[in-house]
Image 1 (cartoon, helix red, strand yellow):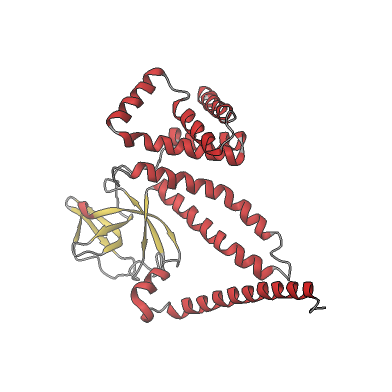
Image 2 (image 1 turned 60 degrees about the vertical axis):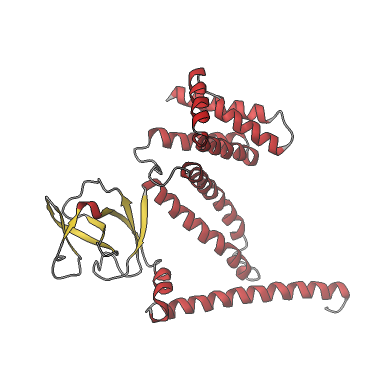
Length: 314
């Protein structure tokens, strides 16, 4: 672990010194990215990387994206924050028992997933600072509405970024509950997180997601493990499912639930007949009212300021 810390510190110190030699930001990023790709590696490893790049150019993309993110972090925050960020990320990749796996998604995905993954982390690191700044005058009577409207999009995006990070780390898939067969554990409108692993060990009592032969995905509890598959049952159903779930149709096990946020998807799919529609319409009207009031107050303030300059007001 000591050598690991010394190695990372040396790499980031080298990056900082090399980037300090240039003045142009683009040149700084280019130098920092190149130094990050080559520092701390043996001659044999560098030759191996060059050989891989020659035969498969896209193989360098994940490492280059990571080095670019670190260089951007250095420009924005300096040496210490970048070093701490590097420690946190590299410790995760080296020592965590569960890491992000995108190998099954596609050939060109590694680079894009790297940007999404680290970009999400950086956003999560900076969002609390943004929210803290917006919240300073939140409860002042004259600025409450404006501050609330300004903070709302950032708070929502922070929440969804945090949920995205959890799903990436746990290799999970969100699924909206559209029936009451698993009540009261999972209710209509809840979003369950499915740990995608067709080879996972499944036992009696586990809640699994599986694909029916005619298309829909079902989330039910395993009540019996058989040689040919699983017998399942919805917690709210009086009888077991009239079929055996083939092991090949299992998507994974349920590892968590987020209450009620799936109502947006249900309403969009079912239209105005959905039971949630009145509540969503009411929430939309209220949000529009808040935005309208805030816009009116900002315009009024601007007009009053102009009138004062012209001597029309006060």
